[in-house]
Each structure stands twice: as C-alpha cells, then as structure tokens.
Image (cartoon, rainbow, N blue to C red):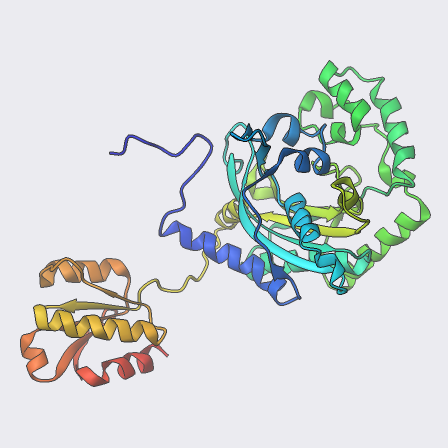
Amino acid sequence: MSTFKAPKGTYDLIPPDSATFLAVREAIAAPLRNSGYGYIETPGFENIELFARGVGESTDIVTKEMYAFETKGGDRLALRPEGTASVLRAALEANLHKAGNLPVKLWYSGSYYRYERPQKGRYRHFSQVGAEAIGAEDPALDAELIILADQAYRSLGLSNFRILLNSLGDKECRPVYRTALQDFLRGLDLDEDTLRRAEINPLRVLDDKRESVQKQLGDAPLLRDYLCDACKAYHEEVRELLTAAGVAFEDDPKLVRGLDYYTRTTFEFVHDGLGSQSAVGGGGRYDGLSEMIGGPALPSVGWALGVDRTVLALEAEGVELELPATTSVFAVPLGEEARRVLFAKVTELRKNGIAADFSYGGKGLKGAMKNANRSGARYTIVAGERDLAEGVVQLKDMESGEQTPVGVNEIVAELEARLG
C-alpha cells in the first residue's frame, strides 16, 4: 500500500475507465477539427494578472478559487482556472491575429484547477475541451460553436441535455442595465460581501447559487429588457441560425455565467441527470477581453465543455460507448525459440495497425492463457517447439474456442483478413 494518495478533490484516470475519457475528448474535438479549428496548448500556469483582469477581480474564481503562488524569482503566478484567457494571450503573443485570416480558430484540451469544496461533478482538478474563434463579430460564428458542441454531444449518444441561451448586451446597453440592477440590489437584505460585489459587478450577484440570495432575485430587472437594437438584432440572428440548423435551445433571461468577460451571446449546456452540478459546459462572446489584457480590439467567441461531467452525463443516461479493443491479438510463446518468433510477429502486427500484446515474464501455458482472457483479445497465437518445427502457430478464436494451425509466415495476413 502506497504512503501517498491523490490530493483532496483530485482523481486519477486509470484503465479501463480512462478509455472513456479519451473517447469523450476525441468526440468533442472531432467536429472542431472538421471545421477549421487548429490545436493549441498553453502552460498550466500563467501570470496571476491575466486571470484577474480577464476573468474578473470580483468573481469567485479570482477571489476564492485560484491556486496562486509566488516563484523564487518573485513572479506571481496562478494555476489556470479556465482556458480562454490563456488561449487569447497565446494568440496575441504569437500575433496569430495579424496573419490576415480572421477569425483565428483554435481548440484545446487540458487540466484546470480551482480550489472548491469537492463533490461529485466538481473537482479541484478537472479536464475540459474548449474552442475559441478570435477576431470576428458574426452571429454565424456564435451559432457555429453552439452547433458544433451540440453535434459532439449527440455523437456520443447523449440526448437529455438542454442548451440555455441569453444575451448580456454590450458596452452600449449593459451600463444602463447595470445601474438598474444595482438600484434593485441595494434594496435587498444581502450580506456585506455580496453588497460589495454588487457595486463592482452586479451581474455576479445574479450568478450567486445560495438560496438565501436567489429567493430575493425573483423581481430583479432582466437584461433582455434593456438590450439596444443592435444587440437585439444580433441575438435574434443567433436564435434563427440555431433554429434553422435544428438545434433546440431554451431562452434563459437570467443566465449570466461566472466570468466577467462575456458580452452578447452567452450559453450553457446543462444535463438534468447530474443534480446540483448540472452544467456540463458553456461559453459565449467576449468582445472586450483582448483589450482587457492589453491587446487590440478582437471580438471573439468560445466555449469549454467539461470532460468529467460529460462522462457523468453518459453514466446518468446509461450510455456505453463502443470503445476500440485495447488488444486484438495476444501471443503466448512456449519456449525460447517461440518467444523470439512470436515477439517478432507481435511487432509486425503492430506495424500493420493491429493491437497486439505478448505474454511477458515466462509464464506457463495456463497462466499465459489467463492473461490472454483478461486482455480481451479476440485471437490468441500459441506456439511451442513442435509447432515451430512444423512451420505453424496455433490460432485460437477466443469467442468460439476454435483453434487452427496457421503457417508462421501467413499469420499476419490471416489476422489482417479476419480482423478486417
């Protein structure tokens, strides 16, 4: 028994469950790769100010949940709590926006970190796949990203998820709403921290999950009633494009999301089978974020989908993914000569794209066949001195139990034919 355990609020991905996580990541990424999005990978930690400016100093993420530290050289860094700010920083640093082909379309996959009270579906270390389209203001781009996320979930076999949609307005109309909301919040019975937050960013109060706060927000003014004509028209076009694509959504005038940088389109994917942690992903438009972190004006939109929560959603719906076999052929050598010959055949099978494994450690026939069974292989190759003297190996079909001799030099071609 090891002395050490995974830190509280974290988890290890181990076989066979890890295969499901890999399949989910692949399914989410596949529509993106098919739509012009290139892969980007950023460091696991960044300058703390990147998140303070971008995510928002009044958010729970920055004030309570970031893992922040100071290096020996005096740099103040933070483990990344989300992906958008890092991806935009990297795109700006590499001048991708100056290449002349906007929007810059990027997708990413990685681990993120937030110091939260651990519970099912909410971890301190979690995995996301995200996508960002940087440098274009177009309702079709917003719709595209929502459609691609919907496509990814449906390709996994999920059906009991809902898409919530809202508009947060822009720099023209949101200040008017902000003032109206602040006036409303000042009249409520709220604690000092919440009142302070209302003065910095009142929309954060709408996102407060505490029942004592939520029950007082029933008559809060709604942003949709304050949208300017341009924002109304933009949002209506997003809605029309989604409807035309056959993507169902629900208008949610109270949807805010937990980050300060969102403008106009905001959306969330929720799954009712996950209890209180029902959000499996979400995103929106963030037209001012580039300027917040020192870049030029680059209207952008993106989303992040939780791999962990998507796996939980699959479990809630009873969906079992069809995963490729980790091993199709298992080789069992009996004796040193067979060990040399079969190891060469396993290597050849792998080069030909067939998943193959080998009985290591010099086990006897009984022990080696137990390993073959555990591997899940469809076929087992067994060979001893007598077989090799006759120029054959024994090929056993693990489903039917049928065993047939096959020439040593024909075994690779035979297995390719049988496995298709």
